[in-house]
Length: 278
Image 1: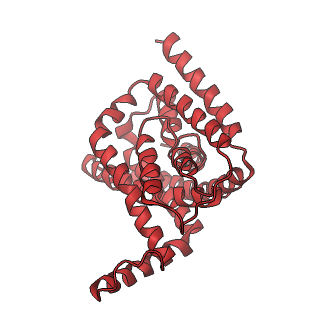
Image 2: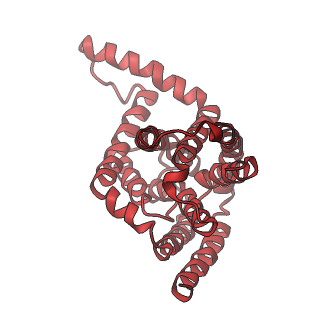
Image 3: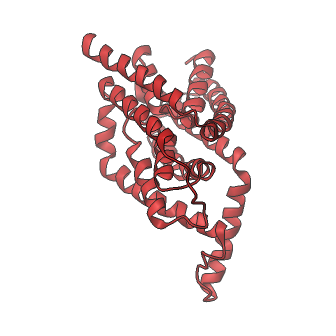
């Protein structure tokens, strides 16, 4: 892999991971047309995920630090018999809601991972995933004003967001888009819905990196690719920060419909290609 390819793929990963267009779908399409096998770029894929994780930590470092501190206080309160006290501790409640949302995502992932992975072998299914993403974004713009924040968020809201994130394992379906729609459908405020969507992506992205990292280590690492891998990870981190900032503004300004048009067009093109070209 050349440095130019690493920069290009890192840019694609960083932008599409957080914009509602599906990073997995875009990378799968690029690998298909470039003739790159998944096992040949496994380490690179893992480090791109690490790069996007860095983006979230940069953008939400205050939230993440508060959650870590609150975890220690939670353990102390439980050990001293004070209980969870969720109504008194909004940061604690945020952490509990993140854990709750992660549960259905993990269940769906473990139960259907092999099935979803098999769909990557045919770009027809990726095209269908893009159409689903476009529809999600279109519907998100139709959802009216919402009023729920962390104080009024329910466990049902968290479970719905988690299920939507689990569905996004399907190739071509955007994780950020699906979780955002799940939050908005549950009545979460737009700014809180996108914040929650990005925060709960941390365990999901981290889990994917761990599983793929194990496979990458088992398949061996070529020292010659370490340079391009490092560059790609850096580009993914920087572009990821830009994408998160853009996504926050896009959600606030209600301009998700433009992404609908893009992924609908891309999905239609991919489906037509898959049907007509052998």
